[in-house]
Amino acid sequence: MMAKRAVHALRSSVLTVATALAVALLLSSCGEDEGPGMTAAQHNEAGWASYNSRDYSGAHSHFSEALGLDPGLTEARLGLAWCSAQQGQHASALADFNEIIDTGPDTLVTDAFAGRAVTALAMESDSVAIASAESTLARSAKYSFGRHPDFDWRDLRLVMAQGYFGLAQYADAQAQVDILDPDNGLDPAVPASWVVGGNSYPTYEAALAMEIEWLWSIVGEGGLLSPGRIALIE
Image 1 (cartoon, rainbow, N blue to C red):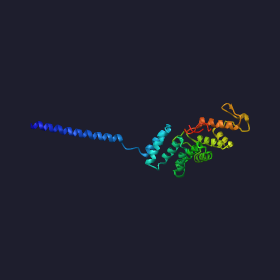
Image 2 (image 1 turned 180 degrees about the vertical axis):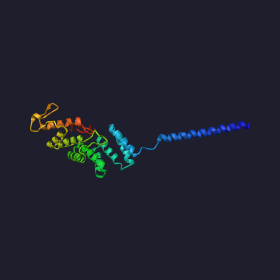
Image 3 (image 1 turned 45 degrees about the vertical axis):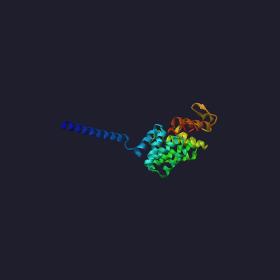
Image 4 (image 1 turned 60 degrees about the vertical axis):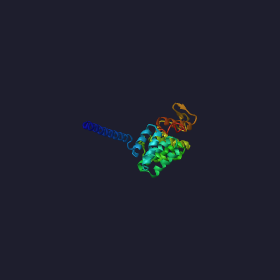
């Protein structure tokens, strides 16, 4: 009888230990699933990955999270500004670009000028767009946006061409076009030259507008830029 009780007690003890271990493992597993939250830097990287996949809403969320964790992470503010611009929130984008230009590190100020150039053009603030593009190119003549390298100095030349066209400063617009397409051949004094893509136009201004629109189609990049507004927002 004593032996049976001893065996029963041993079995109960083993069962109790096994149950305790199972509960501990379960709790440990749940903790691992939850894990630590993403850091500001990780949100920033995820934001740029989403941005370059044209998931602007997802990118916006990541950049907002990054700034919530680290308000001083200026590159996340730059990303937030670009997302706002892509989503048509131009005033918000402009405010963020301006903040970076005024207070950000010099390494990001050039990028902020470039972003402001595009955003201002989308808002039809042609003078601001031109000045911002000029500021970018003065800092980096062959500018390329490190986080989105397809957006570069050519886009900024197009911003200037379109901005000058919007201000009816056609000679200045032509000067930018000549940099991007040296063989365009347009001459305001020669009606026979008013030809773009094999089509003749009745005025020099009409031909120049079509040349700029054609350049958007082959050079323009960054998602925010497209032919027309000639038109800027996709």
